[in-house]
Amino acid sequence: MFFTIHHRNPTLAEYQTLRQRVSWPAFDDALAGAGLSKSLFSVVIQNEHGHTVGMGRIVGDDALYFNIHDVIVVPECQRQGVGKMIVKELLAYADKKGGTNSQIGLSSSKGREAFYRAFGFTERPNDRMGAGMVLVKK
Image (cartoon, rainbow, N blue to C red; front, side, top):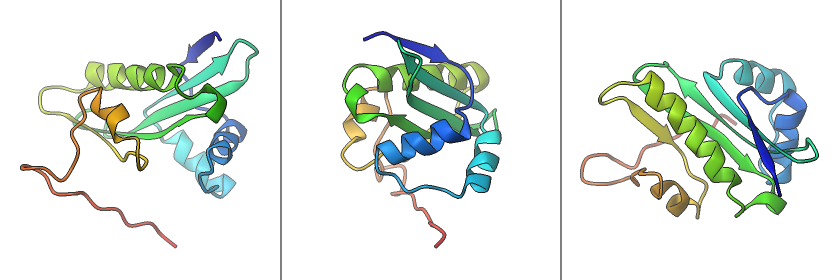
């Protein structure tokens, strides 16, 4: 299978469809659109038929802190290098923009930690950092 990389935000429809395809909860369209518009950098992957099969994006301050979000690959294209393509593009952007001691963070889906470890990410908690925390609004 052949894949192409596009440096752009996904459309709202692409975003919501990708989330649905991997059984992630949907966001309200207005909120999702607002969130996507605040992305610093996004990657969309399409197959040879022009269908969107993956995405990832970075949010942050564009200098010191970069956070990777929404790395999504549709099930039938997983384990074919699409996720690696996405993360490599996101890291290249952060490497170009950030300086010494800038940080790239992410929250891995359960069971996917080894995928990110291969790129040099460190699991938390560790000797230097706590586990990290999240508050999900209900």
